[in-house]
Length: 186
Image 1 (cartoon, rainbow, N blue to C red):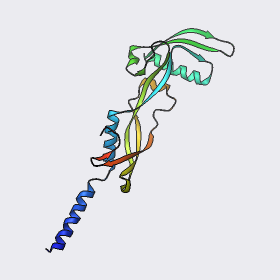
Image 2: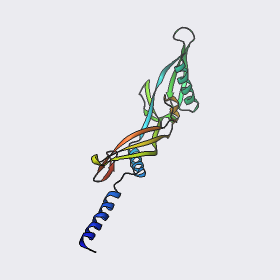
Image 3: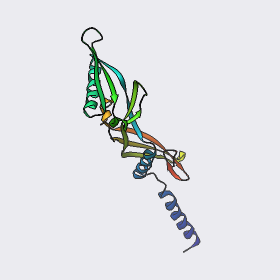
Image 4: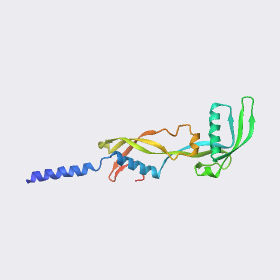
């Protein structure tokens, strides 16, 4: 084997070894995103009132009251009717609403007195990576990911968005000397 052929063969082998392992595949991107979501979950919450809560005779309030009643039936809140107004523009019902011990595991924020509480309703996890588009010139990649809902709580009944919906998002990855990165923790 001549010296030229030996050098050419060495360069070709070196090229295959160095380029092949640095590509961002769908499975590698999914793994990186899932690791990031373990440290910082993509959690959704809903705010709702506790203490004295008034439900007027409107469609929105009727739907909200139905959500509160569902939480009452599941044992997450206690509701006691304080006053019912049957005439005029203030027609509706006023309740005293309290959280139960069962609800506290789902709470993100609980006011000391009456006010607005915040409950976890679900979090997103990776369903699948739809596509990976690498840009070698800038050492970046744009990854299109389909997320799905996981760990739905009873408080998701109060959400304005249907929690069964999926969520598609484009995420930007950076290539560093330590490999591909999506979040700062790696």
